[in-house]
Image (cartoon, rainbow, N blue to C red; front, side, top):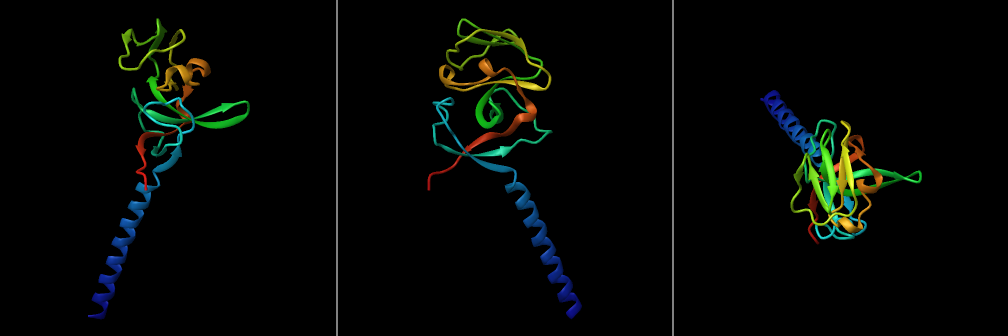
Length: 160
């Protein structure tokens, strides 16, 4: 009888431990970020807090994803939050204030300053802020290496 109770308690502990490990793995996939600047207005506001899913090597990026990307400027690293505009291998053109991906007009993205005509390298993406006229992004910095993507999928934190 005692052996049965000990085995039962051990089984319950193992199940609780397993559930705890699964919960920790799920929670540890997320990271908090704070929006710094106006480049993602009106979608995201300066000072807004976000919870974002950490980006894994085997994750796939999609057009329109909002990502945190590590950018090095003057030997200092920054976290930039931007929207994915073009994916590896795609032909991107910016002309007459409009963006074209593989010859198709990218609708719903607002006016875009600058001119560009390039094919995105296989290991890179092209990103822009939603506030196109006030964003330091791929138009000035060039394409971004996918290996520099830190997180994606914005989840705004609820105000307490």
